[in-house]
Length: 258
Image (cartoon, rainbow, N blue to C red; front, side, top):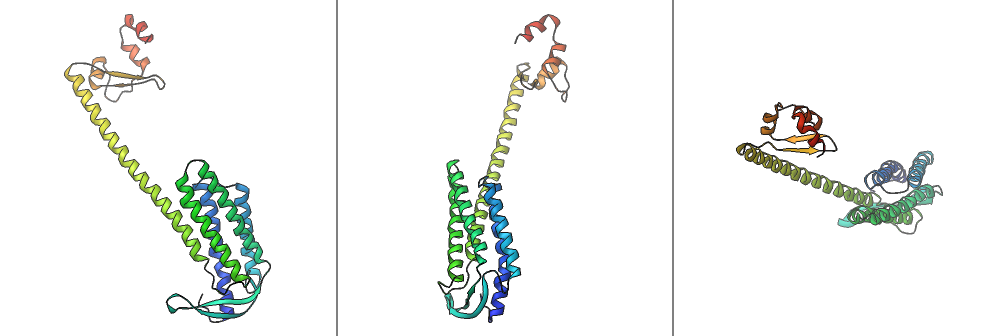
């Protein structure tokens, strides 16, 4: 953060809690709905605690993380850029937010193990593994900064961007697979239509009428020649019962025994 005063820094940290709340809740329900994993009670506990942390963040001044920001240390970062690191008195209520992230980490580990045992190891590694790594990084770095162990700006956004990138990669992979499946399905349909056309051509040339009975649905798949031989129109649905009506009475009993 590039704040010049402690008041600016406190305000920036306060409003940073809003996108963090959105990202954490989104991760929880992405795992629940997309991976179909994770314990529901943990999911609701995380959302509840994070919402409580968000409310407390706007109750306390300057924010949930600090009771008071006494100063800023301006550090030289990559490329010579100057960033601000806070110096202040931690707010004990920040433990609520940290507890929600710790529960998120437990939730992700549990969900990842579930997906792994289910046999979907690719998703477990890409989504679950990356989420666990980035959440651990975010929790550790923010806690060390708040409690004054290290002098550093907050880098919470970078780990969460990594999680979003992993989720986006997995969703795009699913989309690509869906497109490929659709293309293969279209190719199969075209091949099936071509095969049916050849069968009809051969049957017509031999003056045969071919039919196939789906017993479960009581539907007949028939060739054009068959329809003409038995007097069915092109659009008329054909069932076995309807076929018996047009068959010679002496042949009906034998057909029922098929």
